[in-house]
Length: 350
Image 1 (tube, one colour):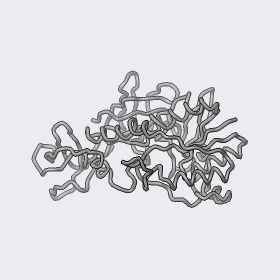
Image 2 (cartoon, rainbow, N blue to C red):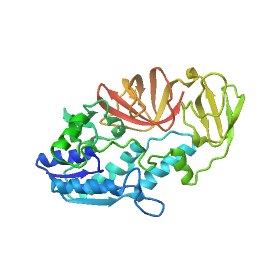
Image 3 (tube, rainbow, N blue to C red):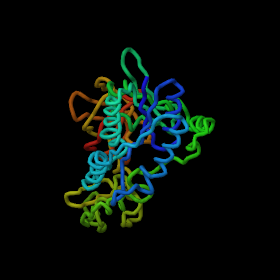
Image 4 (tube, helix red, strand yellow):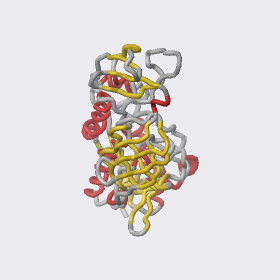
């Protein structure tokens, strides 16, 4: 069996490659170059740094497997970065990791796997794939603190049948222990917590570096009373409390962003509650399902009870209780217990 392993230079993908080789697979390691500096140079922070590629290369050499770097910067810019910019300009809250998986990583990796006659694509995601009653199931990773099934919720049967997530059955502690036992240089490497192309900076600084300079506009309360002036809608996200630039004596949160009029509306925590959303670009792991499910709208948020109607697009999801901080542009993943049944992009809230 021939496996194409996506190696980011981190401990998770390093161990995934090691476990694939231990399983007897013919392993090929590859690093996806997704981002480059304004002059074409490798970035010094975020993803695709020279040190990350060097870590991946040296792990591959340690495991005695072939290793390559493939350039996907054009696809990443058009499919992920431009979408990220457009979403903020239009008052939405994007999840670039989901979009990267949707439009770049698995699409391109599976296509390359076909070209190289690879049977499977292996990644270091903390999720699990198994087969039951003739269909593939996508399930949460064993480690609840590291579970990444949310960012994989767009995958379907054809894709899941070609994917393997070896560390999904491990806790992070176990993954690091395996790496240490094997002498892998990434065993103690810190996890990246940043948006890869933003790095350690603020996303607002990144948007400004890309020439995004939206006009100032009013900050109003729910009754339309003027509270202040802001310097651009991209400085705000739904649910934001700090940095609003207004003081009314009690906490206020961003409850609405209108990019057409450049208006930011703030309100109380109660006004922040959302009872229902409409999902666009909905997809299902197997076949469309509805009824009572669990809905998760943040990568590391809790899954909450919801009723789902999916007879047509857009899919309607009604929460059992009002939820704070739900915003257009976010991905919403749907679960039955620990199994992903589908998901989509939140288009509107109510």
